[in-house]
Image (cartoon, rainbow, N blue to C red):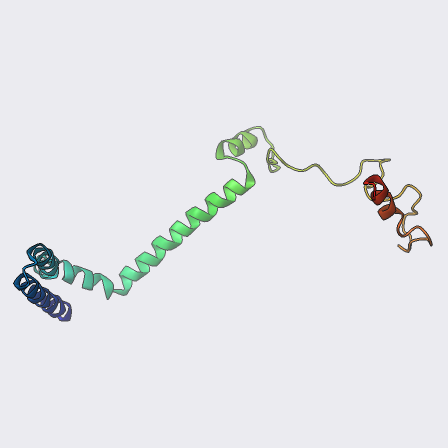
Length: 154
Protein backbone atom coordinates (compact mmCIF):
# COMPACT_ATOMS: atom_id res chain seq x y z
CA UNK A 1 0.00 0.00 0.00
CA UNK A 2 2.79 2.40 0.85
CA UNK A 3 4.70 1.56 -2.34
CA UNK A 4 1.64 2.38 -4.47
CA UNK A 5 1.21 5.71 -2.69
CA UNK A 6 4.88 6.63 -3.17
CA UNK A 7 4.75 5.70 -6.87
CA UNK A 8 1.62 7.80 -7.35
CA UNK A 9 3.23 10.79 -5.63
CA UNK A 10 6.38 10.46 -7.75
CA UNK A 11 4.28 10.36 -10.91
CA UNK A 12 2.27 13.41 -9.88
CA UNK A 13 5.44 15.36 -9.04
CA UNK A 14 7.01 14.36 -12.36
CA UNK A 15 3.96 15.49 -14.31
CA UNK A 16 4.07 18.82 -12.45
CA UNK A 17 7.73 19.29 -13.36
CA UNK A 18 6.88 18.39 -16.97
CA UNK A 19 4.16 21.06 -17.00
CA UNK A 20 6.56 23.72 -15.71
CA UNK A 21 9.14 22.66 -18.30
CA UNK A 22 6.55 22.89 -21.08
CA UNK A 23 5.54 26.36 -19.83
CA UNK A 24 9.19 27.41 -20.37
CA UNK A 25 8.84 26.36 -24.01
CA UNK A 26 11.09 23.29 -23.68
CA UNK A 27 8.59 20.83 -25.12
CA UNK A 28 11.02 18.03 -25.97
CA UNK A 29 12.40 17.95 -22.43
CA UNK A 30 8.86 18.23 -21.02
CA UNK A 31 7.71 15.22 -23.06
CA UNK A 32 10.70 13.18 -21.85
CA UNK A 33 10.03 14.10 -18.20
CA UNK A 34 6.34 13.21 -18.62
CA UNK A 35 7.31 9.82 -20.06
CA UNK A 36 9.58 9.08 -17.09
CA UNK A 37 6.95 10.21 -14.62
CA UNK A 38 4.29 7.90 -16.08
CA UNK A 39 6.44 4.77 -15.52
CA UNK A 40 5.85 4.45 -11.73
CA UNK A 41 2.06 4.75 -12.01
CA UNK A 42 2.12 2.28 -14.90
CA UNK A 43 4.02 -0.22 -12.75
CA UNK A 44 1.45 0.21 -9.96
CA UNK A 45 -1.49 -0.32 -12.29
CA UNK A 46 0.02 -3.47 -13.87
CA UNK A 47 0.72 -5.04 -10.47
CA UNK A 48 4.49 -5.13 -10.81
CA UNK A 49 5.01 -3.06 -7.66
CA UNK A 50 2.86 -5.44 -5.60
CA UNK A 51 4.76 -8.43 -7.00
CA UNK A 52 8.17 -6.88 -6.20
CA UNK A 53 7.02 -5.91 -2.71
CA UNK A 54 5.85 -9.48 -2.16
CA UNK A 55 9.24 -10.83 -3.18
CA UNK A 56 11.22 -8.34 -1.13
CA UNK A 57 9.54 -9.12 2.17
CA UNK A 58 9.33 -12.94 2.04
CA UNK A 59 12.13 -14.80 3.84
CA UNK A 60 11.68 -17.87 1.62
CA UNK A 61 12.54 -15.78 -1.44
CA UNK A 62 15.76 -14.56 0.19
CA UNK A 63 16.66 -18.13 1.17
CA UNK A 64 16.17 -19.07 -2.47
CA UNK A 65 18.52 -16.29 -3.57
CA UNK A 66 21.11 -17.46 -1.03
CA UNK A 67 20.86 -21.05 -2.33
CA UNK A 68 21.24 -19.87 -5.92
CA UNK A 69 24.33 -17.90 -4.89
CA UNK A 70 25.79 -20.93 -3.12
CA UNK A 71 25.20 -23.09 -6.20
CA UNK A 72 26.90 -20.51 -8.41
CA UNK A 73 29.85 -20.32 -5.99
CA UNK A 74 30.25 -24.11 -6.06
CA UNK A 75 30.22 -24.14 -9.86
CA UNK A 76 32.86 -21.41 -10.05
CA UNK A 77 35.06 -23.00 -7.39
CA UNK A 78 35.03 -26.45 -8.95
CA UNK A 79 35.84 -24.99 -12.36
CA UNK A 80 38.76 -23.01 -10.92
CA UNK A 81 40.15 -26.12 -9.20
CA UNK A 82 39.78 -28.10 -12.42
CA UNK A 83 41.69 -25.46 -14.37
CA UNK A 84 44.38 -25.23 -11.73
CA UNK A 85 45.04 -28.97 -11.90
CA UNK A 86 45.63 -28.67 -15.61
CA UNK A 87 43.56 -31.73 -16.42
CA UNK A 88 40.28 -32.05 -18.20
CA UNK A 89 37.39 -34.32 -17.38
CA UNK A 90 38.21 -36.53 -20.36
CA UNK A 91 41.83 -36.98 -19.21
CA UNK A 92 40.70 -38.08 -15.76
CA UNK A 93 38.18 -40.55 -17.23
CA UNK A 94 40.88 -42.01 -19.48
CA UNK A 95 43.20 -42.37 -16.49
CA UNK A 96 40.50 -44.19 -14.52
CA UNK A 97 39.84 -46.53 -17.43
CA UNK A 98 43.55 -47.28 -17.68
CA UNK A 99 43.54 -48.24 -14.00
CA UNK A 100 45.74 -45.43 -12.77
CA UNK A 101 44.81 -44.16 -9.36
CA UNK A 102 47.49 -41.48 -9.27
CA UNK A 103 46.82 -37.90 -10.15
CA UNK A 104 47.92 -36.96 -13.65
CA UNK A 105 50.69 -34.36 -13.53
CA UNK A 106 50.16 -31.18 -15.57
CA UNK A 107 52.12 -30.83 -18.80
CA UNK A 108 54.63 -28.35 -17.33
CA UNK A 109 55.23 -30.17 -14.06
CA UNK A 110 58.60 -29.64 -12.42
CA UNK A 111 60.96 -32.60 -12.08
CA UNK A 112 61.73 -34.10 -8.71
CA UNK A 113 64.09 -32.03 -6.58
CA UNK A 114 65.69 -35.07 -4.95
CA UNK A 115 69.13 -35.95 -6.29
CA UNK A 116 69.54 -39.31 -7.99
CA UNK A 117 71.70 -41.98 -6.36
CA UNK A 118 75.38 -40.97 -6.47
CA UNK A 119 74.54 -37.40 -7.55
CA UNK A 120 75.56 -34.35 -5.58
CA UNK A 121 72.89 -31.93 -4.36
CA UNK A 122 73.06 -28.51 -6.03
CA UNK A 123 74.66 -25.87 -3.84
CA UNK A 124 76.88 -28.28 -1.89
CA UNK A 125 80.62 -28.50 -2.27
CA UNK A 126 82.26 -31.74 -3.15
CA UNK A 127 84.51 -31.53 -0.10
CA UNK A 128 81.68 -30.74 2.31
CA UNK A 129 81.04 -33.32 4.97
CA UNK A 130 77.47 -34.48 5.48
CA UNK A 131 76.11 -33.51 8.86
CA UNK A 132 78.70 -30.74 9.32
CA UNK A 133 78.32 -27.83 11.68
CA UNK A 134 77.58 -25.40 8.86
CA UNK A 135 80.49 -23.12 9.80
CA UNK A 136 82.69 -21.90 6.98
CA UNK A 137 86.41 -22.43 7.14
CA UNK A 138 88.58 -19.33 7.62
CA UNK A 139 89.29 -17.62 4.30
CA UNK A 140 86.60 -19.66 2.54
CA UNK A 141 83.55 -17.59 3.43
CA UNK A 142 83.78 -15.16 0.45
CA UNK A 143 85.26 -17.47 -2.18
CA UNK A 144 81.91 -17.94 -3.96
CA UNK A 145 81.34 -14.19 -4.14
CA UNK A 146 84.89 -13.60 -5.38
CA UNK A 147 84.40 -16.20 -8.12
CA UNK A 148 81.21 -14.51 -9.29
CA UNK A 149 82.84 -11.07 -9.29
CA UNK A 150 85.86 -12.37 -11.26
CA UNK A 151 83.57 -14.05 -13.76
CA UNK A 152 81.86 -10.73 -14.48
CA UNK A 153 85.14 -8.80 -14.53
CA UNK A 154 84.60 -6.82 -11.39
